[in-house]
Length: 433
Image (cartoon, rainbow, N blue to C red):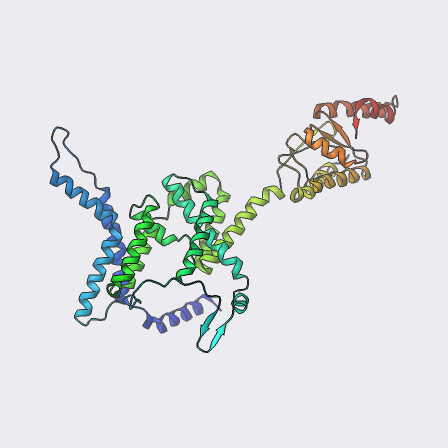
């Protein structure tokens, strides 16, 4: 299928589904976006006062009113859109889509139900768990990741610290309580948090006011909610989320470390193509791969001095990197006409697990097969103790790299002249474990 065929099919699908689109809803939604940004811009107006004159109270009142309007830009836009829809409905003009009927009254206080009644059929708890399958684990995990993502963003913007443990505890308690009021699962939300930030909310007391208004609305104002256009709600949400697009952070991220841009772009593309939930999973997976790659493929520094290949790992020797170090060190030592002896500089190794010890043991065996000496130098106390407890036969450790080069160069010189045997050199020039 070529590009022209794809374009024709897409055009046909667009035309056949155009009956579900509303031009007036789209216009109203765009107008709401523009209105939110326009009203919000009132707070950016800078007034010039004459320091030699007292500013009249009426002027201060007008400025304060403008600031309040800018903070309440979302509410003002929704109210104006609702008035517009009400006027159109009075004149029997069905141009905009209303929110529709909302059941009035507060939810009843009931214990959570562990079964669902659908007509004459009852879905049991075990059947619900079977239907959810892996979603039982995936859904809370995604909810927590979303909450942390939005929380850390606004914590960075507003310069405060976020405690993940406290956040997790609060979400758990909130979900337990809301289950007694037939509520939805609670987590952090991108849209509502962005709207709160846009309205100037600074503390969690804003949630208290939101809750009070929701209770009042459910108890007394549900008939009014019918006239709120859906496009207006969509418009204010889009306007709030657009403020979260931070180009400057992306540019700074690119300049600081280009590899960090990759999970950023992958997460963005995945979220658009396969949805927020799976997009977050893909982003977390890519970030973990980038995080683990330097551990699995650590940077190794190689230098050749007087027939010795000095290998210096820049990080610890653990399970992911053990085999990599073994292969690279041996390849470098054999990649010359006359194989080089290997000095493993352990000055950066502060920890070594069982796989690391086994890698050194295997490297020693390979070196002996190829008649190459393996010398370990500058090991820290903890690492030296681990190697000693491992009881690796014929493992050689010296204090410094310079000592290894000097003593083993002397040994090779004595071997070539025939003045000293191996036994003497080993006993007097090196330490064996």
